[in-house]
Image 1 (cartoon, rainbow, N blue to C red):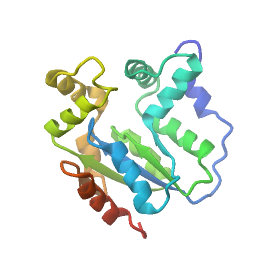
Image 2 (cartoon, one colour):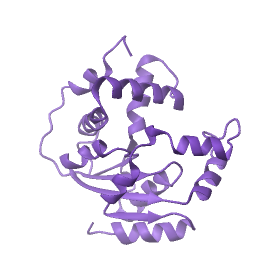
Image 3 (spheres, one colour):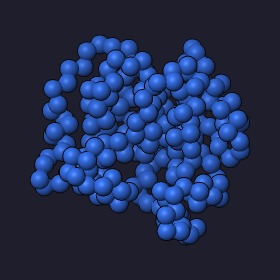
Amino acid sequence: MDDIDIYLFFHYLNVRKEAFCMRVIMIAGRLCAGKNTVALMVRRATGDPSAPIISFSTLFEKILMMRGDEPTRENMKCVADTLKRRYGQRVFAEMLSELVAEQYMDRQCVIVCGARFPEDLRLLSEYDSTLVGVQADFDVRYARALRDPRKNGNGLSREAFARMDGDPREGSLGTILKEASAVFENNGTRDALFLQVRTRFTRPW
């Protein structure tokens, strides 16, 4: 990270935030709770199938691409830790806000996955926004992790998943979920989950 001040690169982009109507829907949840699944369902429920789905990891992937590094989980953790150490937790919401304003100003809705800390919610104050959560039991999430080659490439023990789930970098989700306008239970079928999402997001929101 010493070769380029990535934060300043984002923070001082020549982006002018004009008045525009955009809806930001932020989704919070633990590891393998179903955040991406809910994001796809939100698209369907809102009738906006082209709504961009981005995450805080999107920022780290862009930084790693600029550096010519692979966007592995460990590399993204390294970038996140470096930025947090230099600028504090608030940096991620600031960078994501700049990214949204730069690339998606003309969109009606943007879906953001992966809020983990109260500071991440700062993005919600800048746009017409909604925070929702998704949760699932540990055993259900572990079973999903075993089916995910990104997390189970070399085999994933229950203990290893518990360590990942309890990593401080997974954030203060209990606090965040208390702020959510709805928390979807994702221990059952996709149809049952979609019914919850559709009930929350069928227009008017």
